[in-house]
Image (cartoon, rainbow, N blue to C red; front, side):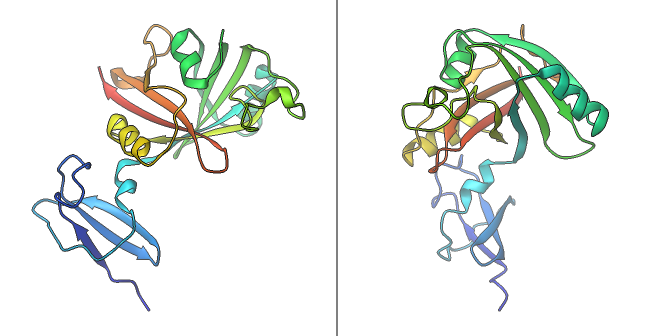
Length: 216
């Protein structure tokens, strides 16, 4: 049986969504997509928590923490054909707050596909990561630290990181830090935008990032 095609919430139902009116389109049982439409205020039909999707725009990038950065660049660029679009060094209190580590010195390489999310390679020069099989590579709660080699985090792009941070905090999500600004002196982005980001974990300890790009 097809799902009811459209249900909606008005701005009184979801005041945390910036007072915007939204329409929730059911695409399959238990799944929904959200779009803004002018002058729409339909009655609520008991869809569970779909409005959060309105605040996530896409997967921004997938992150790999690597041991041999040059070898990994060569593989993804020369063998798989991705394009290197950025190669920068990051350090300072902002990234220490983001990743929950001290004395961070790291190289970051961004590789792009023709379409879709980017691949981000990070080589931590400091602090050194323990062997991934050792307890020293784990945080106090048993989850991998941000500098542990391997597939490390998925980043979600949003157009309102402060509102989403507040919403998730209210839902008992614990963040590593307040939202941090990437210094323009260390990393620049096309179009003159700046990036803000924050790390957190899902219920099974997987590392996630929220990021926002806006004009300065």
